[in-house]
Amino acid sequence: MTLILNPGPGTPVADRILDVAKEILGEVGEAGLRIEDVMGGAGVQAPVIYRHFGNREGLVQSAHLARFLAELQQGSETFRAETLVAVDAGEFRAAFDRLLDTILAEEHREASFVRFEVLGVGTQRPLLTEAIRVAQSSNYAQPVAALEHAQEQGWIRSDIVVSEFLVWAVSSILGLAAVAKFRTEPGIIDQWAATHRQAIHTVLFGDKL
Amino acid sequence: MKPKLNPMPESDVARRLLEAASEVIETSGEASLRVQEIVEAAGVQAPVLYRHFGNREGLVQSVHLARFLRELTDEAEVFAILARAAGSKEEFRSHFDGLVRAAADPARRDRRRTRLEVLGSAMSRPELSELIGKVQSSTYVQVVDALIAAQKQGWIRAEVEPVSFVAWASSTMLGLAAVEHYGASSDPADWWIGYQVEACRAILFGDD
Image (cartoon, rainbow over all chains, first blue to last red; front, top):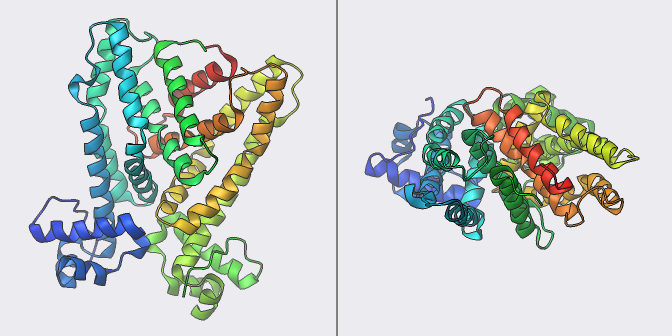
C-alpha cells in the first residue's frame, strides 16, 4: 500500500494511533518506531494502522507532520495580533524585544528541536516537504502586517523588505536549535542569542554597535 | 545487535556497503533503505553488514556521519578563504566578503540541505549527536583563529567573541537551507544573504 499523509485530527482511532506514534518519535526517534509498539499503545490491530496511514512510512510522516503543525500552532499563539501593537517607536521596539526574548527563551528549546528534526527528515520526502511548505506559507501573514505598519510609521528602517527580513530572522533561529543540541561550550547558547539580537537590531532598526 | 558507527571503514567490503547505502540515502532518503538491496549492491552477505555496522540503524547512522564529515571538509575549504594572511583591515574585509559569497553560493545548495538533513536526523539519536558535536567544533578552529588575529590588529570590534560569533554565523546558514527547500521564493539566497552580510558587518566591523 502507498503511504497516506494524515496528520489529523481524524477519527478517534486514527488520532489515538497518531498520538502513540508522536510519543514514540519524541522519545526514541523514527528509527525506533515499531508497528507492534503502536498496536500495543493504541490498542489496535495492524490493519487498522494501515487503513489510516497506508504503511509504516505513512504513519512516520504523518506523526512528523502533526508534531510540526503543533509547533507552528504554538508559534502563532506566541505571536498574536496584539503582540506588536504600539503607539510610538519606543513602545514598538519594547514589544518587539519582548517577542524576541520569548522566541529565544529556553522554554522554546524543545519545540525548536522538533521543528529542526522535522525540517531535516522532511528534505528527502516529497509529500512531507510539500505539506510543510503549504503549512509554513501562511504563517508569516500577521507578523508581516505588523512590521509593515511599523515601517509606514517610520519605526523601523524603510529600506528593508519586511517579508524577507522576517523569513531571514526566523529561519536563522534554526541555528540556535543546532547549537543547543550539538555544542557543549559553556555559555554558547546565551552568546548565540545575544548575537542574534544584535543582528536583528542592526538590520531592523539600523542600530550601530 | 547494537548499531556500530563506522563512517570511515578501513575494510573494502565495509566501504562498498557504505557507498551503496550512501547512494540510496542521497537519492531517496533513509526510510527507503533496504538491507537486502544494499548487500546485493555491495556483493556481500547480510552477516558482513551486521559485523561492520551492527545493524541497519548502524549503517544508516554511519552514512549520515560520513556525509556530515564530507560536508565539514568542504566547509573548511570555504573557511580557509578567511584564514589567508591579510595585510590590512580592507584586505581582511574583502576576505570576509569572499567567505560569505562562497558560503552562500547557489552551487552549495545541496550541501546546505545535506547538513540540515543530517543534523535533523541526528536530533533523536544521542550517539550520532555526540559525535557530530565533537567533530563540529574542531572545523571552526581555523576561522576562529583568523578572527582572533584580526581582533589583535584592531580590524574587528573588541567586543566580538570569536567562538560564539562563528557558531552563530555558521549555524544560521541552516536557516538558508530550510528557506531554499521549503520556502516560496525560488532563489532566496540573494536577499537572505544580503541581510546576513549586513548583520555580520555591523557586528564585526561596527558599520552597516
